[in-house]
Image (cartoon, rainbow, N blue to C red):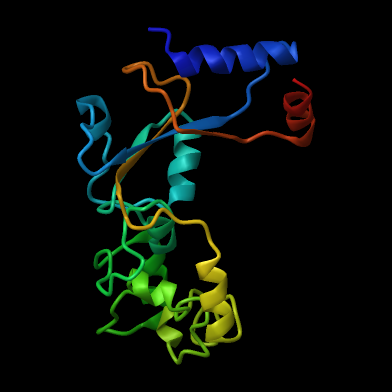
Length: 203
């Protein structure tokens, strides 16, 4: 089946007039609460493990479509940005995510409690040393986080673009090779080199 995104991708490649050219890309479709999610999309909600949005994007560029939801997203900050989690939620996304499992391994605490979305919003995670939360460090007890003080961390997080309030039920990431359904994406992410970007701008 020839899909809309498949045809658009081929037109884009043809415009470069370079034989054998491939430019990895990911199509992204947001489903809001209340939307009907097609069965072919819903069945691609991975269970039993979590993926960061970066990992999911990379995998979809390789042809592995994935439906990201609050249950399987592995990055708390991305869950806020994508509207899967409320930025003021004081409960962790779950006991185990890709991102927070790294913290748990570094903290070596039996009673480790993963950070909540609110811990990110309030600047605690990205200024973990200043906040006295060394257990939120990714690189051991001496990790300062990304910022030296909570105020800077909080301001940086507040300036990140986010879909809030959290209205997203799930995000479907897929490549132009996905042909089970003809889904029109909301966003297309290209993994292009400068030369290809220049051709895109010229086009």
